[in-house]
Length: 105
Image 1 (spheres, one colour):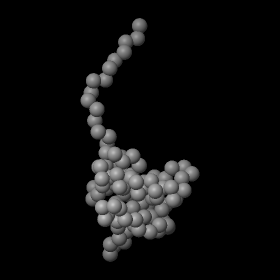
Image 2 (cartoon, helix red, strand yellow; image 1 turned 45 degrees about the horizontal axis):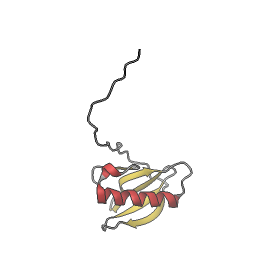
Image 3 (cartoon, one colour; image 1 turned 120 degrees about the vertical axis):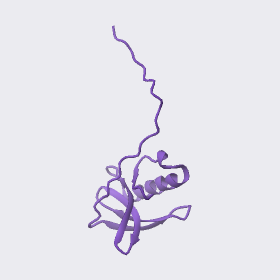
Image 4 (cartoon, helix red, strand yellow; image 1 turned 30 degrees about the vertical axis):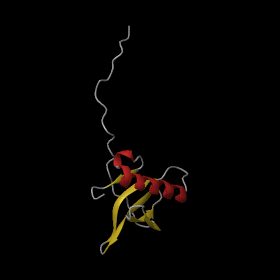
């Protein structure tokens, strides 16, 4: 006879995925986006990710990235990235599903 066990461990908040910087050599510059709260990010597109961050005298400084889904257009990925970043600043990182951010965010 099978016995059924119940997990009584309290639910824990979702842990964000570990951030890993993406190689941006030969990335396409998609421009600058500005959020409702005034934050702005430069967006670079690689074959697999949209990378967002800022520029400084040393070059591009990555704040985070979002992996593109298979077959997702750059435009659709940009819309999703904008929505994720707005959610990040409005409600918190625990409500973001697709972006990975470094500690500076």
